[in-house]
Amino acid sequence: MSHPTEISRLRFLKLGLASLFFVPRLSLLGNGLDQLRGDRVGWARLKTPSPSWSRHAGSDPLLMKFFREQTTLNIDPNWYTADPADLASLCKYPFIFSQGVAVLVDPSARRNVVEFIRRGGFLMIDACHDDRVNPDLNDYFRQQTAFFAEMMPEVQLVPLPRTHEVYRCYFQIPGGEPPHMFTQFGLCGLMVGPRMVGLISLSGLQCAWDLVTEHRSPAPPGTELLCMRMLVNIYIYAMTQVK
Image (cartoon, rainbow, N blue to C red; front, side):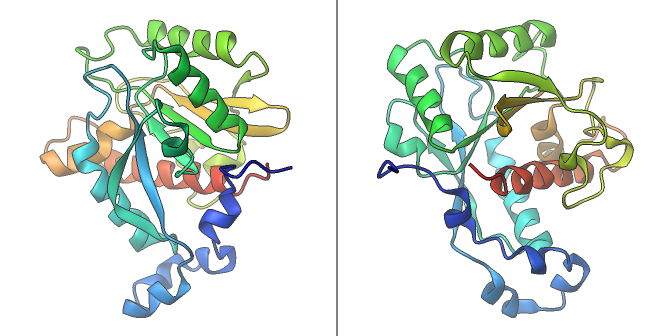
């Protein structure tokens, strides 16, 4: 029996997959593109005790604009707060972006995040590369994995190979690996049986679309675009997983 607040990614999105693969023609559709879009869905960041939980969120509307221009997904152009103190707040969103879950200390909040995942939600964890936020990325990774080892032991951590569908399900990502800001880490899938329920990224994808807003780019040319394409792939792959 389904729980009344159980998350259904397919119900939320109605992706219209056939139209998704005609991206070069979307710009010619003008206002008619909205007729192809399904139900609107919000983009949310997980609120945590960390002062950096919403870092780079001011640039999220740029990413949402990219989603709307490059796909038929009906993404709200704003960003929202997903409060782990309120399970219903989490379950409004099929996909939640997070700076990290290890900083959650309240037992109820930690359980709610796990329940969100068990009800079908997808959690994307992406490290920020600012040394003031994450001085040691290896330590950051250990902290995130320790959370799942304690709170959701059925999760298996699986490094994604270069042949994984997430690198080609929509955009073809060069090299079969995520575009990186400053490091050479791949993506690690959070698996429950055959279903991917989340991802851990140390690639600082979020730092890239923020570079566009800030008009500063220490990364190699084109990294901003590649990081946004990678996030689109992750989102589409997550939404088309069958629970």
